[in-house]
Image (cartoon, rainbow, N blue to C red; front, side):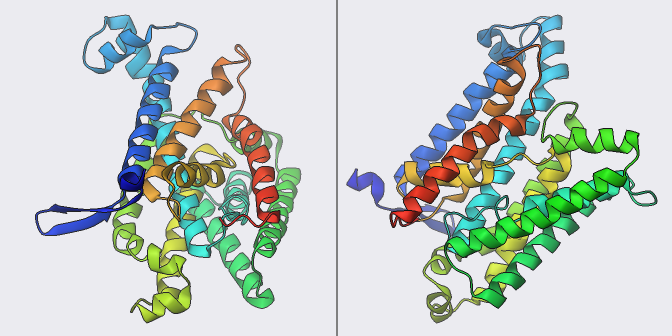
Amino acid sequence: MSALSGRVSVRVGPVSARVAPRTVLVACGAALAAGVVSVLALAAGDYPIAPADVVATLLGGGDRLTRMIVIDLRLARVLLGLVAGAMLGMAGAIVQTTTRNGLASPDLLGVTAGAGAGAVAVLVLPGIGGPVGTPAAALVGGLAAAALVALLLRLTSGTGLQVLLVGVGVSAFFGGLTSWLLIVASIDDLARANAWLTGSLNERGATEAIVLAVTLMLTTVVLLPLAARLPSLELGRDVAAALGHRPGRSEAGLLLCAVGLTSTTVAMVGPIGFVALVAPHLARMASGAPRPPLIASALVGAALVTASDLVARAAFAPLLLPTGAVTAAVGAPFLIWLLVLARKGYSS
C-alpha cells in the first residue's frame, strides 16, 4: 500500500513527471469498467448480440447484420456517452480542486442550469439559433451563471456550505428563467425543449459525439499547462503565489475550461446531473489522492454515463428513461451522504 500511495518519477525523452501508481491503477480500472459497460451497451437492445460477437465485430469480424447493428446503429450513442461522461467528470474534478470545496460541481454551482437556460432560449425564441446557436447559447449561459456565482461569493465571502447555498440559489434563478421560456414557447418549440431538458442520449448520435470529442481535445490542450498548477492551488492562493504562480489567472483559466466542458456537454445531450459531482469523489476515494485526479475522474465519469444510459434504455424496456433520471437517482443520495460527512467534519 505504501508503495502504491507514493509517487514515482517517469521520464519520456525530455519530458518527466511524478505519478502515483495507485492513481494509475484506478484510471486503468475505470477504463476497463468503461470498456466492459460499452460492450454490454452495444450488445443490449431489441436485437440482442452476444458480448463476444460485439468484441469480434469491433475488431473487424462479425457478419453483415451484426456489423450494421453494432457499428451503424449503436456505436455512436455509446461513444457519445463515453465522451459526455468524461467531460463532466473532468469538469467536476477541476471545479472541486480549484474551489477547494468537495461539494462544488458545475451542477450545484448553477453552471448546468445557466447552460440549460441559454440553450432553451435558442430553442424557443424566434430570430436566434443556427447550426452553432444552441452550443454557443449554452456556453454563454454557463459563463453567465459562473460569473454570477463568483460575484455573489466575492460579495458574501462565502465558504463551505455557503458556496453550495449560493449555487442552489443561482440554479433556482436560471431554472425559473427556463420555466418562463417554456411557458411562452409555442407547442412545437415546447416539445423540442422538453425533449432536450430530459438529459438523454436518445436521438443523439455521431454529430453530437464529434462535437464533444473536438471540444474535449481542444480543452485538453488548454488544460495541459494549467493542470500542473492544481497541486499548488489546492494549498491556497497565498501558497500558490509564494510558489511563483498567479492564482487569480490560473483559477480563472481552469474554471473557464470547466464551464466550457459542462456547457458544451449540456448543449449536446441536455443536463445529465450529478456525474460531475460523483465521478471526482469516486476517483479520489479509490486513488487515495488528496484531490480528484483529472484523468481518473474523466474515466469514471465515462463509465457512469454509459452505465446509466444502458440502465435507462434496457432495464425498463420498452420504456426508455432519460439518462439524467438514472444519474439523479444515484447522485442525489450521494450528495446527501457528502453533506452528512461534511457535517461530521469530513475533510474533502
